[in-house]
Amino acid sequence: MKTKTARITRLGLLSAIMIAMSYLPAGYTNIGPVPITLNPIILAVAAYTTGPAGGALIGGVFGFTSLLQCFGRSPLSTALFGVNPFLTAVLCFVPRIFDGYIIGLLSDLMRKRSVKPMINSYITSFLSAFLNTVFYMSTLILLFGNSKEVTDLRNALAPSKNVFLFVCALVGAQAIGEWITTTVIAGSVGYALSRSGLNSSNASKSTS
Image (cartoon, rainbow, N blue to C red; front, side):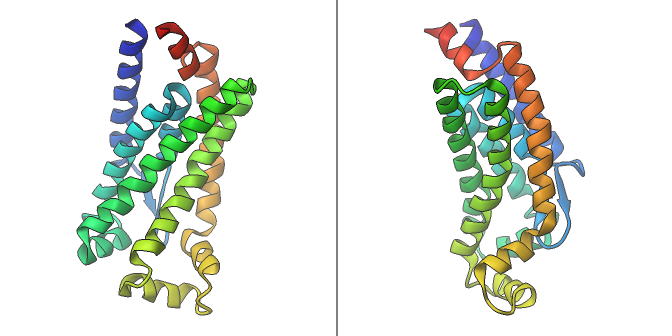
C-alpha cells in the first residue's frame, strides 16, 4: 500500500514538473520549425522508476503539453492544428504515450535480464529522447505528409523530396543535443533513484 501511494505521489510530482516545464524555455524552445523539448527527461525518469504504465501516463501528460504548443507557441503546431485539430491531437498524444510505454517495457526487460542499473538507466534515457523524435516525425509524415504546410517545408528543406533528408533538416542538430542532454540528465537521475530503491522492480517486489 505504501509503495502504491509512493508511486502515485511520484507520478503526480513528475506530471506537475512536466506541465511546469512547458511554460519555461527548458520545456520547449523553438529553434527552426519544430520545437525542441527536454520533456523526455521527465518521461525517461517516469518509465524507469514506475514501468510501462507510469511511462504511458507521463507520456500522456507530455502529449498535453505538446498540444498547448498549438495555441500560438509553435508556428508549425499552430498551422497543423488549423488544418486538422483531431489529427494534430493524435500527433501530440500517441507518439508520446507509445514512447513512454515502450521504454518502460524495455527498462523492465533489461532489469529482468539483470542489466546493471546504471546501463539500464542511461539506455532508457537515450531511447526516451530518440524514440520521441522517431515516433513524432513518423506520425507527422504519416498524418500530414500531403498537407500544404508540410509540403512547403519539405520543398524548402529537402528539394530532392528525400524523406530521410527532410527529417534530418527539420529536426536539425538540435535533436542530437536533445538526445545527449536527456541521456546525461535523466540517466543520472534514474540511476540515483535506483540506488535509493525507487524503481519499478523494487515497487513490484514490495507489492507482491
